[in-house]
Image (cartoon, rainbow, N blue to C red; front, side, top):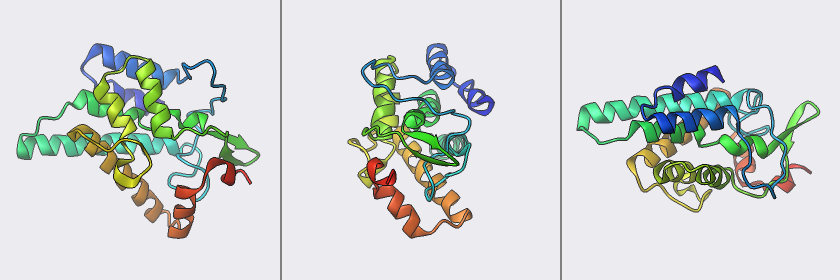
Length: 199
């Protein structure tokens, strides 16, 4: 968590910085009709077995890596092309793009499984940010981070959303390659419905 807060402290806008730190420290579901237990954020993988960052603590590693890569690329684009990039929105969106995954997964014995939540993690995360009055631009970054892969209802419409989407894809695919996960395992996890994964 310390690494996430250090990155959140790079957000210059005080209100957005406080909002981001609050949800990182206290991720909860605002909609009282949805009752899913929260997994321990510090131990949650980015996805269950066979996908990227499928080890305990993988979600935080992935989130930090995506955020750092997005900041580095944004700074390079600003320097090289004089690109106008809102770093505050970029950092908040990158840090929170997978925030609600802790409600989609649970520890089951020695492995991780799905809770049964049927919402896509990007939509779920975006809904929670909307409920907490985050700026529209940040909500869009989170909802659109699946890009044009068909995982979400939105595709990136801003430079910040496009950057987070690409950094998410690069980090997840590189971790899988570095840790030699088979393409078949990755494809199975991508297209598996939560109830199928529980069988």
